[in-house]
Image 1 (tube, rainbow, N blue to C red):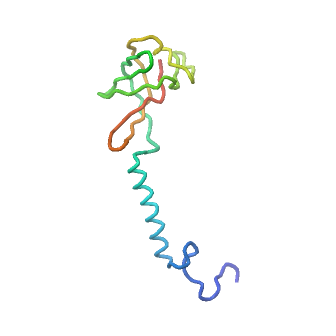
Image 2: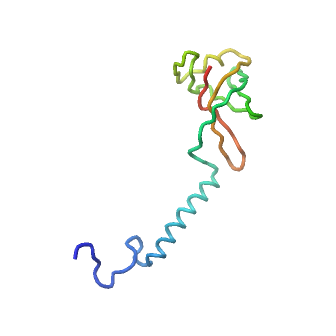
Image 3: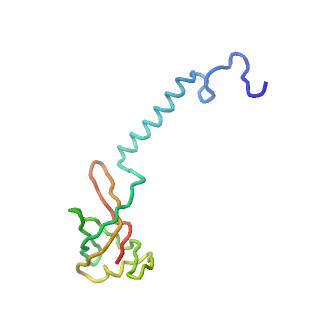
Length: 126
């Protein structure tokens, strides 16, 4: 008969030495262990982007923007939008080219690294 097993060949096709229940428990355990180890490593994927506004303090090599009591680091080559809505990649945002402060809108992602809450800017609108 098509799809049938020979006599005495019961058990799980994944782990024939285990019964179907034990194989299911092993799979669930492996998934739980992978999740736990990922949490220990401190990387969480799939966070949403928060749209915020704040005052950015631009230095020669780095910039930080304060919003909601947090200071977010702004990478020098963050994707950015000029006032007319044009997207720019691979260059420093125009509103951060001179040293000093400016008000910007930005997208930020918060994440947990080894128990410390961090945030990074993923785009800037000048």
